[in-house]
Length: 127
Image (cartoon, rainbow, N blue to C red; front, side, top):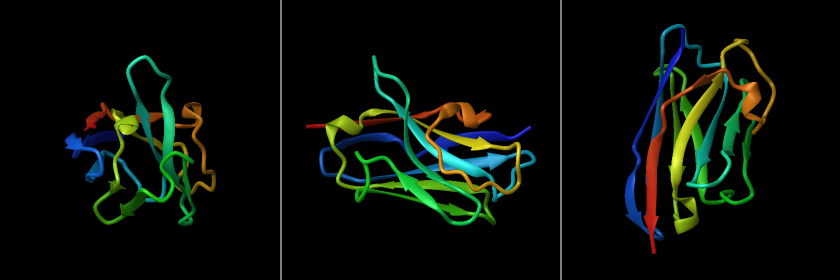
């Protein structure tokens, strides 16, 4: 079983930066398709960024140019660098993985495609 644990959340002022980490353990593979999602109070969970086994990346329009997804395969860790944060970025951030395949080509924000989820980390951005 693969476990995902997010960390790095916190409270910052608008314009600030945070770096989120997602550590995978168990039978984790650095080649999984993985993604970052977020959910604000009263809103549906939405995709933020995703990465596939071949280095392809996808970003939501709302974060493109401000957020950068990366991974350290040796450490089985996924990162999300968040810059120029806005109050609209306030949410619980989750990482997710599709552990059904060790190689994966999709770049998707559909949560149905991910079978492993972390517990989330809170990001709060004040005006």
